[in-house]
Amino acid sequence: MEPQLSWYLALSAVLFTIGVTGVIIKRNVIAMFMCIELMLNAVNLTFVAFSSFFNDVTGQLFVFIVMTVAAAEAAVGLGIIIAIFRNRETLDVDEASILKL
Amino acid sequence: MLALLFLLFAGMAIGCALAVVAQRNPLYSAISLIGVFISLACLYVTLAAPFIAAVQVIVYAGAIMVLVVFVIMLLNVEEEAHQRQRLKFLLPVAIGLAGILIAEVAFILVTVQGTPATSGGLTHLDETNVGLTQSIGSALFTQYLLPFEITSILLLMAIVGAMTLARRGMLSPNARVVPGAQVLPLSMVDPTVGHEDTRAIETDSTDEAARLLGVAELRDQSKRE
Image 1 (cartoon, rainbow over the protein chains, first blue to last red):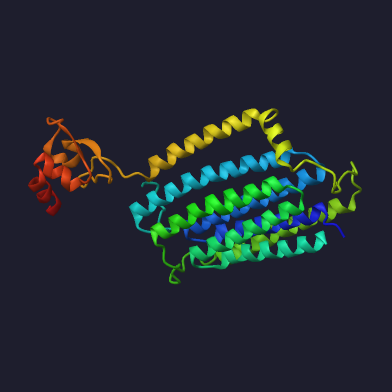
Image 2 (cartoon, rainbow over the protein chains, first blue to last red; image 1 turned 45 degrees about the vertical axis):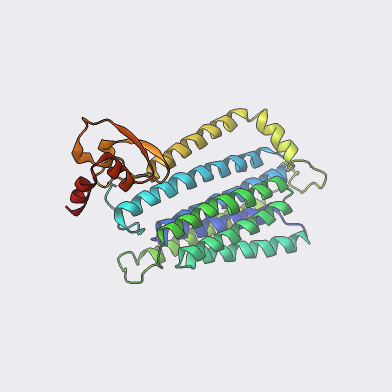
């Protein structure tokens, strides 16, 4: 039995939901960051599955660009995390409730 | 056979994703996330996308996670404390929202599967070159050249932004000199001196710079204050 397109979409939905749940319940800003990466990967799986089943290369190009954006996001996001930690001495997002560094 | 592989790697991905959320130590979360990335790369291989699978391992599991682990170790984060109670209601809310999301997706999938496919082309073709590096490269540099260039500008902005955010502010009373010979004016070593002396020296450390400029005593006083 061959895997169907819907199997991949269901797996992607489950991974995305786990990522959303993590962003909501986590308090450590680095852990929230990793949950966002998880959501990006779930969407990438959807793109690759559609690209493979429709025989169209566009989806994989989208994945390529999403990965680049994720790398840029990682660099800037971790820079922000370091700046917050240097000013607040904590990584708890509840502590960073005042919009001033 | 392919279905078996799908079930194996899907189980690995879901298990590791649950571990990412369940772990309290961020380092364990990061390692579980690497597991998710690896199993997704294996799924990409079963989807006949070897280039994306390789990039997934190299860029995600390699570069990005090394950056994350590096920051975790740099900041020396301890495990999440148990004493916070303020946001406890978020856990049932999150689980409820997740259940709703899963139910919606399941409903859509069931509904779509009931209707006949319009194109009829939704099957794996064994003889395809869609996922190969050559087809991705030719499409990337011809049809999708503009997004590619915009992405390069985005990366440049990310480099500049990360450096700006992570660097220490200059000219503060406890200004520090980064190791490595550099030329710096007197006012940067000791702001109390003022700006009239613009003599620049070459040095390896803040203390050496203060000694060379003859403001070591002044600097010690300002440190004690």
